[in-house]
Image (tube, rainbow, N blue to C red; front, side, top):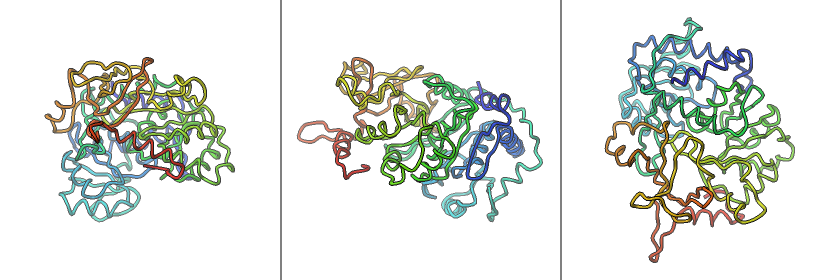
Length: 439
């Protein structure tokens, strides 16, 4: 299955409903789709082979998502560049992925110039929102093209994207995702929602759309919800948007939530519209989570995942965000939740046998939507799998009720005085100090 089928559904069901809000711009599903189609036609006209890599360096705005969807609709493969990385890091990725075209925002012109000085530029470069020497106008690529979608045959095993990891164990690796895996990961997120999404849902995007926020944007888009985009995280801008746009859903990392809770203007804004606050990527200080529950109510959901999974491995739902009661219940706040529906997960020892409850082992998982391979790294790929299971490199425990507790990275283990110490244990201890906001 091709995820493009899912992207067309809200256009058929809610063509005039507002799909995206960004600054003063409001764009309907019909308008978004026509823009995607015109750009997809332009990309098809470049004469690139199916699966050719297109790199994108753009900030948080509707045009970024149009480019992302158009690349897939044209049968090409996306390489989304992290706007926070250096020109040298970008240049390495362009060379490693064999990128054939680059699309970038005008404000990243100096970054692109730095990339060109370090490595040969892709065959074609397109700039959005202005003129840059050596780059063609992205708007001209789409101008005059048909508003209907191009007929492009895309198979489940065709390359859809290469997502480069953050490099916790060295140089970033390219995680290969096919169109079929893309489809199933979106379906996986949808079937794990405890409440349905629809036109009345309003999702606030504050993190980089090149990462987890981009996946959530797509999930909300295909269900006809409205996505509100902020260019960058600013605590008061988030509070202002929640009140003005009646935000129901938002994805925050723990540091963002902490900044909101500490903001002196928080009491001036109405946040009662919130129904879901997603969080993950780092330990959430228990005191901060308790304050969040007091402030916003039982709206929190935790996801545990990684680049190789591209969807939640475990979920801690609102029913498990309990701060008072028996220790058996309250301790779940320290967990990452239980395995998501459709995800086969276990904790194993060095012999690959499941460990008993409470014993530390490596977290491994398998699913039909897991990534295919590391780009051009067959030996790394072989080491990452065992009998069809992906070895996450994360250490954890599982209790009698199936709740998974993350204790750290396998490669980060500290041995002191003959004892094994996990950095996460140290970080959580430091976070208990009231003067510490982030470790």
